[in-house]
Structures are given as structure tokens and as C-alpha cells.
Image: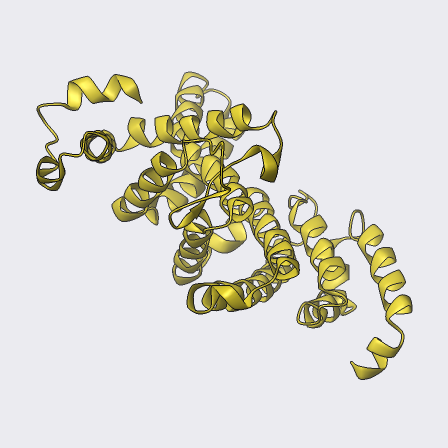
Length: 302
């Protein structure tokens, strides 16, 4: 690695070339010839980590081809998963214990890692679902990103949760279509397989995760017109993200809230009631968390 630092320009040029290959070379070949291992080792070095992370992001955006050896492909993606999870956990641990020690370049790298993990979970979730402990660990890390102080990390995770939490609704649609077209045996089989995979994701999304996502979502619904920070969260501001994107961001937050409300209406109603009580400053009523009486009133707000 010391030699690599002496030839940083050459290493960077090689990484740029490798990133181009990552767009079309079979993932199994990238693993076979050591490119995944090599780029993974560069994630720990500030001079090369962004370029190396870009390599993994390009791969994770690709979906498993129909003509590939499934076991070899999934093994390669699981290897990438482990590399990303290790780097991600290091950042989240440091960020939680010593946030003042992390500079903007590290946040930029963490944003790239989080974006890569979102791509992995969105396009290759079947590789993660093969192991229950691995799935739970992945969802916990994505939840930490959603709760994170930095708006950029929170926003990347928002895109992931929209994909994951929409899947149960999509699976119902697939099941209905498969049922209506039962004569098409192959299509029905594909629908059943897809449905099982999507149910597999939802099994690991606990009520606590739903509640946490809702709580964070409501706190971030506001746009900060003054300071870029509010309490323990970096709130969206024009200085941070520009003037035109807040409506798009808030729309995504509302979409996520609606999805959760459709799947866990009681939890959603309880959180909304708590938020209303906080706004009105009624702390005693907030601790009681009434769910039934106001549920019919609160639900349309979602």
C-alpha cells in the first residue's frame, strides 16, 4: 500500500478503468480475477476510497442476469455486501461515539457507501435475504442512516426504505395478477417466487423499525429557513440542498408515511397523535398515546 501511495496517480487511473469495466464485465469474472477484493482493500485509504466505492456502486446497480450461474453470482454479491457492511459499521460507530472527529470528506465517503448499499438492497436483495442475520444487520444499518444527523445520509436511506416498504403492496398486486392469470403457469410461478422474496423482506421490518421511521420522518418534514441545524438533526435548507428540491424530498417523505400508514395503521395513528400533542405542548396527553379515539381523525392526514 505504501507503494500504491507513491503512485497515486497510476492507481487512480487504474480504478477509473476498472470502474468502466464494472459496467459490463460479468460480476463473477470481477470476483474471479480479484478486482472485488482489490477494490475492497482500497476503501480504507482516503486517497482511493471514493473511486473504489464507485466501483462497488456500479456493480450493485446491476441486477442478476438470467443466464448467470446463480451460486457464483450470489457469492460475489455477498462478498461485496460484507465489504460494504464492515466499512459502513466503522463509520456509524465513529459517527455515534465521536461525531466531532469526522470531517466533510468522510461524510462524502459515507454518503457514497450508503448510496451503494441502497443500490445493493434495491437491485440484489435476494442475495441478502439468503441469511436472516445478515438481513437484519443490513436493515439496522439502513435505519441508522435514516436516523443520522446528516441530511445527505438520511436522504439516501429514504430511497431505500421507499423501495423496501412498498414491496408488500406490490406483492399483493402480483398475487392478484397471478391469480387472474392462473392458466399462464410460468407467469404464476414467477409471481409466487417474487412474492415470497418480498415477504421475506417484510418479515424483518419490525414494528419498532416502522415506529422509528415515522418518528424521524415527522421531525424532518420541516424546512429550515434559517440555521442549517435544528436540535440533533441537520434540517433541509436552501443553503445545503438548493431551492428546488425540497418539494421532491417532502413528497418522498409523505409517500413513505402513507406506505407505513397503509401497512401499520395503528402505529401510524399513535405516532401522529404524539406529534400533534407535542405541537400543542400537551406532554401528559402525549405519554398516554391514545390510539382508538383519534384514529379515524388522524388516518386521513396520512
